[in-house]
Image (cartoon, rainbow, N blue to C red; front, top):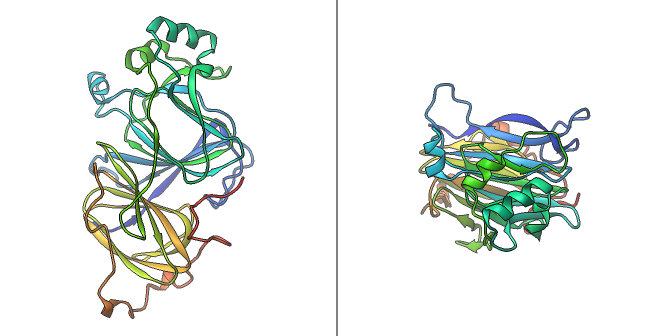
Length: 317
């Protein structure tokens, strides 16, 4: 297979926002967008394990929970939904909630879900650009307003909504009680540098999320040994024959491609369907390849204005 540009699907949500810059080239002035979902665009192709999204929150999302693999399969689905969040941008005071402040009984949880007091029982945490959170299946969670988040997840969008802040959407309290871990969770992850350019943001049994910070005007080789997704979060350049700009997503499986970095550097998030970082994901090509001209499409190295790749990716909203 080749490394392909991911197709994009825009999803309207009542909690979304109109201004998607700089992550999307087109803003929506009529209806709030909550998600941009990336796909590999292969009709009839093999089933994928992961789903990559951008989340834009103008309001607080519902309090919710997702089933784990065992429960999902008992319901006829292929997998549960564990997910990881990388905060791209955050307004002052923005927060996420992962897990509960204290253990609850099922009766306490039901009563709190019915009267809305469940919001005060969540473990709300401040969120800033560059923060990483892991939300395993079964963890009660919510995302507050004023955030842009890159989310990688198992490929299942089954959501049991517990409280929706007065919106009229359906709730699923009985299903949530059946799948939820009614206890605190350890969610915040600290990056671990593998090399100067490569950092492991988080790993779990279902996926690994990494960040590549590549300096300006360099050439690298990216080798994807299994299902992998890439998202440009700062700078620009080219991946294979494709230009790479902020907000662009890419898909690869069992293939390799050159990354030719533009004058502002490039920062990439890489999500792989593996429980640990892959050896040889990123390398320098042989010296003889460095002088080869890049693809014509890549000569402009389109990049976002004023991006400094030496800083953690993120913008002030």
